[in-house]
Every structure is written in structure tokens, then in C-alpha cells.
Length: 467
Image 1 (tube, rainbow, N blue to C red):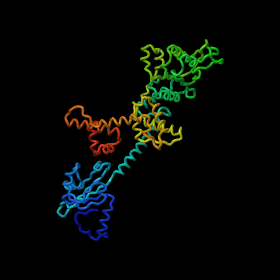
Image 2: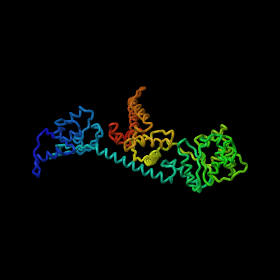
Image 3: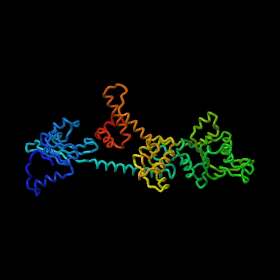
Image 4: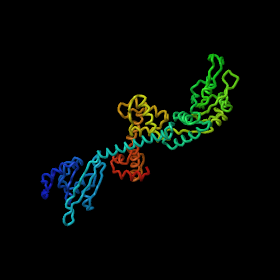
């Protein structure tokens, strides 16, 4: 502890003067005492450790003229004649410091001393951020459960548009109406089809799914309707049942219906209208009782205009149209879906991997051209390749693009292409820095720490620029 002037010992109170000096010196908080003119007369080692500046023996008004930061709590007490409290987020790089300065008055009401107490709040703020992250993860867990509960085992949905779609799917499941499910590849069209089947009165019957684009065109008719013995060269001598017969009493799901050959579309339409099929090589129709669900990632209406898909079949299939939005349009589903797939992969591979907010935020930024299917594959990829308890960003298949994006952002720190009024330029730079910081940080406190300003400044600027 450093003294720059002598002081009289305190009255007898059971503690010696030396004891009191030791108590002050051993305080974990920093203590600074200045006189009524801002001269430092006492400072303990904790203050010097926290502030990282040697202020022993200085005069604060003179000292403040030599540093960029011109504000000191002990000086504000002299002006306001009352206690002041500040929190500095970047006074010392990497530290959050709480400062309280209190006046001591003489018998004439003048300030004789100012006692300043400083406390390093960095560790406490880190613990608070960890608690907030844990609370956010807990909220995420309950959202995941909410999605599973809401969908009754169907598609996980937190996003309002997906919730509405699932509610519609539930409603149409009670009647045998034909449903056309549309959406990009990988959005979960078969998942929705299975959900409709599982909620219908046909749920005890079979669910037969087939990809129309995966079967050679010359085999499609026999696969759909079956054939009788000797129907064609190479046919089984016992004949074969087709997909319509296999789905009798249940649901037939035709995926990628837009790939169905034009000539077979006529026979499919007849089967749907009559409820009968005729096997290849046979003359007698067979009644079948099925519910048809179809799906496609193509624009069937455009295909009708181009004479690539029969108009009558299109209207027969499109009684109810369920469009599943791509994952980039329902980003709130990414977190619960990620947790769902993580649980599946942990069970499949005997792992106990966990996921943190940093990885989840990167997943939410991705555009997901492969949609839910791609997300599932990415989570599986990370579970297999991550080495620690938590999934790592470095294990993301698109990790290189993240690094390039961050590199581009760093190169674009400040770019001058033309002259503008300086106040406007300052505002543009502030908006750009804040926008970038908001992408990388979850709270205004973290943003303030990252860009070196007070939290109140961050909140005010975000509101000012409408960010």
C-alpha cells in the first residue's frame, strides 16, 4: 500500500493503526483515497492490480489531461458532491470494472477526502454470461420438447408456418382426400406424408412409399400395377403384385411425381378415378382401396403449360396442396432440429456429444440448400469428427466458407470509395461495426465488450440506427 501523506491513527477501537492499514492493504477490492484537490494520498495494491496503472502520488486533474479517457469517479464526486457509481467495460482491455466513489466532508461541509472503491467484475460477468447461455440452452431444450409434443411424432416445428402446416396435415388426415406435398428437395415431404398416414384411420394399414424417379421407365408400369405370369420376357413365372396392391387398405406415397412418364400418367389417373388396376398382361381389373399422397420439388403447373404433365392428373392430385417451406425460411426450427438429430446420432454411434450456442448460431446463418436432409447429415458429420464433448465449428463441412467470410469482413474494416460529409461517414461506419458485432454476439453486453464501448451506448446506437 502506498501513502503520499501522513495520517493520524484512529481512536482506540481494538484495532491498531497498523492493523487497519493491513486490512485495507489485504482488501481484494481496490481502494483509492484522494483529497479535496484530487491528489492521491493512499492507494492499495489491489487498486493498482485492477486498474493496471500506477497512480500513486499523482494529481488526478493533471493526470486526466495525459490520457484519452478523461473521466474519473473521484473527480465527479468533487463536482457533484455526492456518491457516484460507474461500470467501465473497456477502461482496461478485457476487463469489466465497477467503480464507486464516496465523499467525506469536513465540519464546514467541504469535501475533505474521496474514497474510491474498484472491483474487477470480469469473472462475475463471465459467470453471468455462462448462466444466460445455460438458460438459453434450457429454453432451447423446452422448445425442442414443445416441437415434438406439438407434432405428435411428426415434423418438429417451432416456426409458425410449420405449425400451421402440421395443423392442416392433421385436419386432412381424417378424410381420404388426395394431397399434393410440394417443396424443395430435403424439406421433409415424406415425413409429412407419413405423419398424415399415422393420424388417419388407415394407420393400421401399410404405408408404401416409392420414388417415381428412381425406377427405370420401362419397369414403372409393372412396379405400379404388377404383372401376370408370362406377361413379358424375363417375368417371374408366378407373376408379381404391384405397389397399388401392396398398399391396399393403407396409403400409397408417390414421391417425385413430376418424374412420372407421360404415358403412365393416363393409367395412374384411371386407377385413381376407378379404384381399379389392371396388371400387365391381364384383362381383368382388380379393385384396390388406397389413399394417394404425392410429392414433388418441381413446378407441376409450369409443367402442365409446357405439356410435360397431364392437366387432368394435376387437378386430380392437387385437391389439397401442402407447401413445406425451405429451412432458410424457418430458421427457428434449426435449433430444435439440430438437437433432435444430435440425440439420434448420439444413440446411433454410442456418443454423448453436446452442442453449444456458437455452433448453433453458425448453423442458423447457413442457407441450407439441402434443407433438413442436409442439416441431419451435417450433425452426423460433426458427431463423427468432433473430438471433444462439444461439437466443434472446425468440424462443420462448410467451416472453410465461415473462415472466408470472417476474413472478408476483416479486410472490409473500413473502405473509402467516395467522399461524404464526415458526420454521415461516422454514422455509416458505426452502423457497419454494430451490424457485424450483432452477428457475432448474442447480447448488448457482449457487443459492448467486443467494440469497446459502454452497454448503454450500444443500446442507444442500435435503437438510433433501427438495427
